[in-house]
Image (cartoon, rainbow, N blue to C red; front, side, top):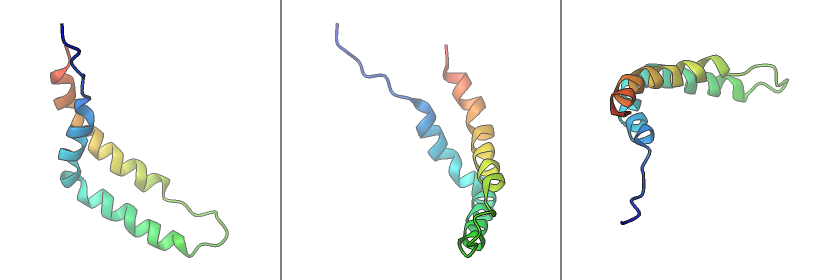
Length: 69
C-alpha cells in the first residue's frame, strides 16, 4: 500500500477565487496606503482585511464542501 500524500484543496480554491475579489482587495490596499502615514498607531485596516477574506470564503465554501465526503 503506497503512502498517498493528501493535498488540501482549500489553498487551490482560494487562489482560484482571488480574481473574483479584486474590489475588496483594492479597498484593503488603499487603506494600507492611507494608514502607512499614521504615526499614532490608532488607524488600522482590519475591516477591509476581513471583507477581502470574507469574499474569498464565500467563493470557496460551496466548492470546498462539495469535495468533502
